[in-house]
Image (cartoon, rainbow, N blue to C red; front, side, top):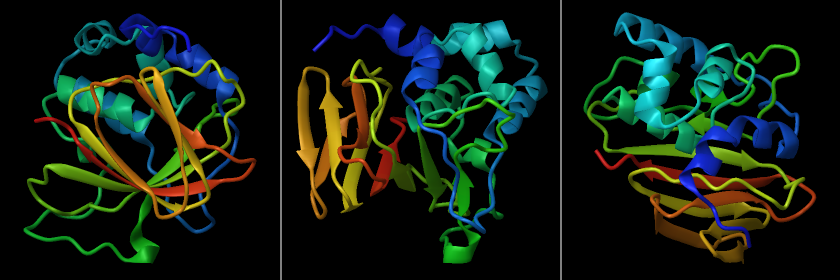
Length: 218
């Protein structure tokens, strides 16, 4: 298994996503969230340049620009890095209801982050639906994630502050944690520190469905 460095997981992410991701969209009827637009507006409101955001996150300015211009859909790990750079939560880029002490998200109200209104030629390696929208001050971000098969075995592993919990609802999921790898089946789960370089994808030639809960480490 190749040695993974921070530079590889950050600066090469854009090109690797284009090579390894599939081209698919959310389930019919699910509203899409244009995350790139939210990130750009958030950045501009704070008076931060693309280069300054790149310096804060360790990503390349090219990747930040591609995300903001909806040419690639950022992974959850990428969103965590950007949110931490802004000292905010991932939910700030996804939007949602007015926040209060509890949140109920009906099936028909779930927002999908996937191709997020990507322009022609844009790609996304998976879709994820926000399940915690509306809960004020939350420390965890729950998502329903639809994973696609891997097309390139030379995968990029992300690392960021926090912790992640994954539960396989259907299909089989291959998990890479640094030099360790394993396959999880329906009903299996895994809990790990997000600082470990990691990557997950469907282990079969079909979509896999997981529940993912992310703690940003803030």
